[in-house]
Image (cartoon, rainbow over all chains, first blue to last red; front, side, top):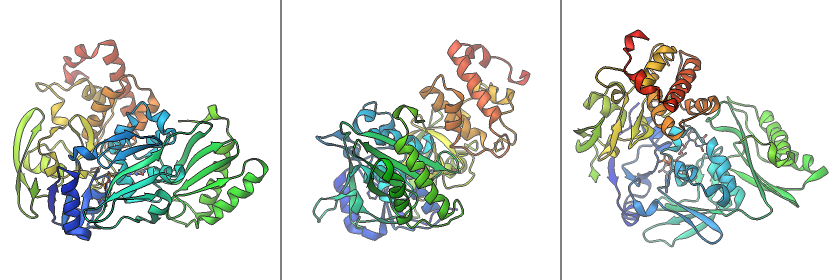
Amino acid sequence: MKAASFDYVRASSKKEVLQLLHEHGEDARILAGGQSLMATLNMRLTQPKVVIDINRVEELNRIRNESGYLAVGAAVRQVQLTDRAELAREVPLLAKALPWIGHFQTRNRGTVCGSVAHADPSAEIPLCLVTLGGSVVLESLKGKRREVPAAEFFQGLLTTDRQPKELISEVRFPLAQDGTDYRFQEIAMRHGDFALVALALCLRADGAHLGVGGVADRPVAQTLPLGDELPAALNTLAWSLGAQDDVHASAAYRRQLVRELGQRLIEEPSHARPR
Amino acid sequence: MHAPAEQRSEIELELNGETRHGRTEPRTQLCDFLRHDLGATGVHVGCEHGVCGACTVLVDGVASRSCLMLAVQADGRRIDTVESLARDDVMNDLQQAFSRHHALQCGFCTSGILMSCVEFLQRVPTPDEAQVRDMLSGHLCRCTGYTGIVRAVLEVAGQRQSGESQQNASENPNDV
Ligand SMILES: Cc1cc2nc3c(=O)[nH]c(=O)nc-3n(C[C@@H](O)[C@H](O)[C@H](O)COP(=O)(O)OP(=O)(O)OC[C@H]3O[C@@H](n4cnc5c(N)ncnc54)[C@H](O)[C@@H]3O)c2cc1C
Ligand code: FES
Ligand code: FES
């Protein structure tokens, strides 16, 4: 299948991107890594009038370690984070989740912000962002620069709080906190496929903050009690997500994965985990 | 660069070490441009939506799906396809190992897999089997069951480490 016609603009600055978004709004699409957009163009699921390529905008290709968070710019590819040696110290949850995203060939081009903009309910990066309590920075030519908490940004299947004239200029991941153990696990049909259920965990002595992807229409995170109360709390969480049957798995199987995998991830000793 | 819809804009890229020019519409995928306009028919097109990996090429040395890139995005870039591997009609060590280990039957998936292997072995010169299989998860092969491919990649990695590959590359490929 071949894409319908569109104008292509290779932007060279953030200002130019914002100007084009201002001018074209809904008719424009940002082209980041293209690992999701290109397929939808080829299948004509989207037919934008203008495609704005941000791949060569140097000022968007930045990773900054600020006080309290790691800021990742719109043109930063997933591979740039997997190659970042400090990431395991800075945002260990993300370091553990990245190898689960697609394949090395798709991580070579796919961006971090593109995954957030796309908002697939089973995507790993949005799940980490929500579980860690991170945020999304949105900019437009005329509007105010907004920083939106991840939990408010994701609104449903491929639906976010981003307005048509806004660019996600960066996403912010809170840095690791002392005394927290970060864990990630997922089940997919084959490695690299989208997750049936993905779990991201911040484990502290007084509770488990567990994020679940692939079940509800967006990533959801909740703090659960440890010990005897855990199984009942996991069961309540599993039922609250509104799991659906699809060709890959039944709703009941997804709930069971949340309970079983959740319990294991929380209770397993820290050295016993694969990946 | 502003490339208007339905008009062919001029682009220049380095294909397998040679500077090449062409004119292309914005909506043309890189894989189609490489095949139809530049004659690099070793680039295979399977699914056209990023799933099968048959169209994998190197973009500035990085393994990428050429069906998920626009040809206009390759302007000013270095692209390497499977045509870059053989020298003077002699297949390189990877290609020879694929042949030896029956790592292909119909060969449709092979050119993409080879290009992934090129970058992979630079990044991970001494992979274990699990790492090779993880790299191959980005490719679909309907014929081989992957076992021969895994063997071939592991063998070449071992040879390159022990410096045997030079000697191997000069073997007559018809002997294997
Ligand atoms: C075979 C395959 C397997 C995959 N498996 C997984 C997986 O397991 N998990 C997973 O999470 N993903 C997976 N993906 C998708 C992932 O690779 C993409 O990288 C990601 O979903 C989108 O990022 P991108 O940079 O490619 O964005 P693009 O495809 O360029 O854009 C996606 C959408 O977001 C918009 N957009 C992008 N950047 C911005 C921005 N800065 N501001 C505003 N809007 C923007 C675009 O306009 C478009 O609508 C897979 C892809 C493939 C091809
Ligand atoms: S043709 Fe590009 S991945 Fe299938
Ligand atoms: S050899 Fe036929 S698809 Fe791989």
